[in-house]
Image 1: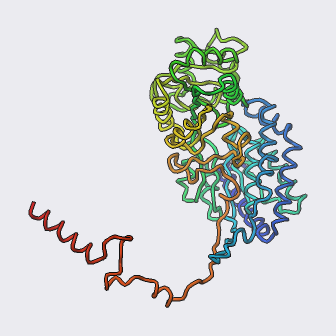
Image 2 (image 1 turned 90 degrees about the vertical axis):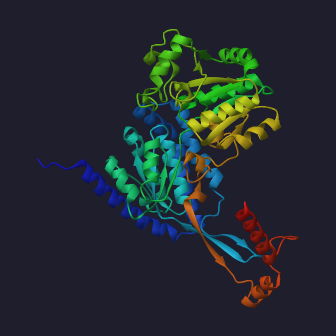
Image 3 (image 1 turned 60 degrees about the vertical axis):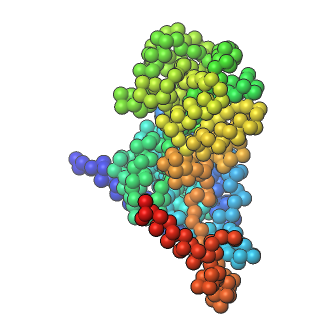
Length: 494
């Protein structure tokens, strides 16, 4: 019996997949906008047709979330994304300035490495395939091992749709032997032009350190502020709807709530009315020891699980069966304050502040500890409050009066529908945008001459004759030199 090395097989597979993807991408680059759009539309339609089947597979494979909500995410990742991008111009000349005589041409980056997480496996594959092909690229997926079966089936659905629409099915492919070596080889392959990384912090850091240009996302840890002018019952409904959607697996979901101290009785009463269960001190300590691992990272056993499951695993005997979310009072951030971390399950931290200024300081502290650059949400009728927080909070998205999970991904707001949410420089990301086709292409400028050298010379100031002014009414070059001389002389005396 001949034995084969799994790592070597996986690396060989990567080389073959990238080679086939490169050939398919070259064919795509010769297609018209209409041909590209036909392929993207076919993927969207196939995603909708198979939404329930793929959702069931994702739930079976990972144990995360709810099937009904995963159906919605699959439809969102296919038709929702398509409806937003379908009219985007991404082939050939995409912009022309008649006055400046500058033409902008879209240029595909080539082959993209797409990292797919276990939290949103099928919807992420649909979404990334659409935006990659819309921008003229091929994509090779590196699947999370626990979601391999459902991701492979999603890729099979996508490849069939691509073929039926007249494209090369190798525009979308997937590693079938997922190993760390295969993923590393994919990210470092000389023919991979860009990495689109969605997953854990370690994987995103690996993408950025691979030497290949990458678009990665940081963790979400968004607080939600219940400002005193909000419609409290509606605001609480939105937050709980958001936090329980697919059991909290969307990184833009609320991780904590915060209100002014004098609002606590009303907020707690309304939350309890709508299914929140506030932990007592003993329960708070029990769950606090469970939600993080020894190294301070999130315990995967809470991810995408129901309140009932989490309560049973953590030994919370008093939590009622009717509870929709678990809420724990939190008074600090950092080591020893586990509820201040990201929790991709139906668990919320509860902070307070004496007024909106202190609330803003706490929000910023939480986000700088974890979640900088991602998402913050607030519920208010006061536009001045929106302006105050938007100027100060270190995030790329400020969600106002909407469920944060759905608002952040663009389902309940007008932003680009996306399952990869950039966190900007403050969050260690290459973009602060919801990632779409425009982040997956380069542009080539064609610029026509407007002035000859003689005109440029005539328009230049004559510095030698005192015509070089720093600003209107300012000093010329000789005056600047004299001022510097006087300052130096004075310093020498002192």
